[in-house]
Length: 168
Image (cartoon, rainbow, N blue to C red; front, side, top):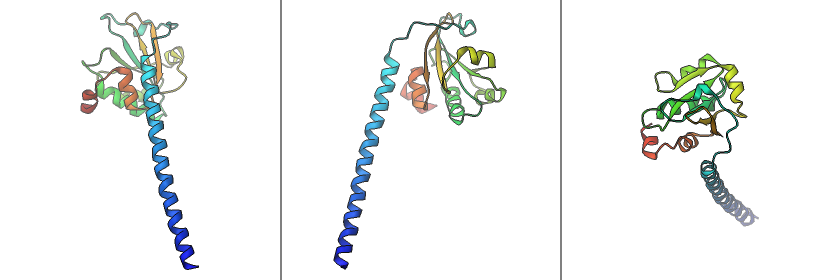
């Protein structure tokens, strides 16, 4: 009886180890699919612009990247801090943080991100989820919008190079 229980314990341990390997392989596949989806989203040509916000136009011909955030969203706060870290002369456009609450402006204080606190404008931009990044052309016409799930997503959408990511 003792040998049977020992064998059963060893087999259950081996089964657990095999399940862990299977789970790790499945997790790896999910991460690869997420990466491919992110690259596919970034490569999709912009849909015909349907929204225009003159406030996000620029005189220098550079686009404006608007990160739309919500006050009670921890992910929004993290993405805002990351945007503040990567915004600067190496960014190929202007960085704006759009929120409805004054407290969100603190997230990008002392950075080159322009905080715009305007609940009406948040409603006009009308994103489906926060944080979302919306790119406006130099004339203020929307080019695309993307939900930002991680700092890597934000870097990819802003076209920030890996060396800049490491220094941020």
